[in-house]
Length: 133
Image 1: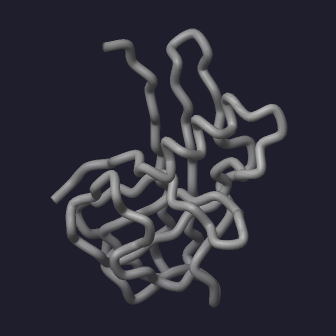
Image 2: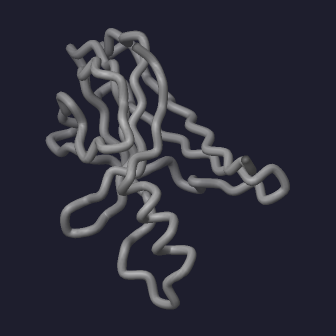
């Protein structure tokens, strides 16, 4: 169990925002965490088992992210959980979402569990690279 996948909705977001003169789909700007362990697939639309972050399911990305590296065709997304957030859970999944009325999942990743407590702060760094075939 480990890996990251840009979802079909993530590809829709990218395509729509690239080729629509006035995009009506918002850019990814929030994240969620959970305890799901199923490997991510392109058809994922939600977290497997979402964990509340300060009473809600989504939190904004760290200010200044995503950042773009146009030389290497790479974006970097950074998210952060404080010592007060998502405690008493073994976190094993994270997802990136936009802010549409019904948020669209851009990507989802699973990883080895992090036992989240008030003595632990967590930063996730996700890099997405566009490669030529």
